[in-house]
Image (cartoon, rainbow, N blue to C red; front, side, top):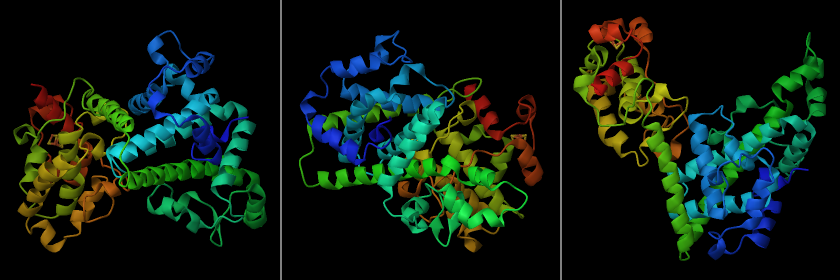
Amino acid sequence: MIPMSFINPLSDEGKQIVRKDGGDLDRIYEENNQLIASINSIKSQKISDDDYIPKNYVDLVIKRIEWYVEKKSDSKNKFKKYAFLFDSKITKFDVIAFYILCQAVGIKFGPNSRESRAIVELQGQLIENRLEELNFNRRAKREVVQQVMNELIVEDRIRWTLLADLISSKKISLQDLVLKEGNIILDREEFMEHFEEMIKNRQPEKMYNIFIGDRIKELIIIKMIMQNTENYIKNVHEMSNTVEPNPTLLKIADEISEALSKEIRHYSSGFAGGNAEASPLNAELFPPCIKLALEGIKSGGRNEVIVLFLTPFLSYARLNPSVFGSNTTLKISDVDPDLNVTKNEIIPMIYDAADRCIPPLFDDQPQEKVNINAKLGFGMHSDLSLQHEGETKWYTPMGCDKVKMNMPALCKPDEICKRLKEINPLFYYLDKMKK
Ligand code: SF4
């Protein structure tokens, strides 16, 4: 039987573990023989290198982050050295590590910080991967998912409004759900009762598995636990304003931040075919199409050039030039945590190009400022705020084929374009930067 707290550390079971075993912050750096023995007993765990095994609670906190960082850069890798994270033998230690992590980040950095958002995402990915590891035992998996869900949602009928927080924060989409009169349908019987007669030429069972099955229940519990983790960090932060912060937690918070910074350094290098550090933009090295776009558009297509072409190019060229060399998805704050570079270097360049258009783009279409924020990943809002990050995707730079097709007047290939086979304007910039 999989303990519920292995999936949801915020469950009553998880809270009991913390009450019973997790109170002594003075001892969390001490070697913990029980933890080491548990991990050594896991058959799938790689133990060839002693460094793979966390020795105490703080080590376990940092290993969780290292897994998250490495997973981001190589999502398909199973990383045998972290096998212990997916074995429920570590539940008790894992739950305590979760609370240490949230409390340290909540106290030192608060709920809107890069660290806080990374911890929430980490927790979601950990649960998703733990559930995947249970695929060999579907019965156990269904049992634990149902138990977790029963504790998270006590109502008989799940109104969609119960998930309003998740929907408004874009953690879940209404399109993922099957609704009947405002109620979310999850049970097979309920689905049959409402929809069996309406389904023609298809097997209702199959339709249930396609539209709902186990997938939606798992999605809901993962997103709800992520939301609850975010709320917990927020509560810790609010409480920390009224009491003296514990110095041990502040120290751990710095270690967490440092472990996450390795992620930034890791992503800032590794462009396919060479290394590309994030560095201030050098307009001299831009390809012909970008130079033309920066001069402003004098005919039609201003919006497309400024919002869809220039905005992704300038932001990635400045902050994540290696984007096509790593198979990972980054947010701007992963590489520009306080958004200073974005606000003070990138946005002014985009706005200047918009002002050079004839007529100036924002004179008749001020709403395009909102669209620029959206293309940077900050949702449809007039302010560029960390709070909205993730509501939309940070658009990657358009390839040369699309530029040629949609804005042919900008594409004036030179010798470098031809040598690089006219693939993407970003490659042109990186190529010139290397020289
Ligand atoms: S080939 Fe590509 S990089 Fe060169 S001008 Fe055309 S779009 Fe720009």
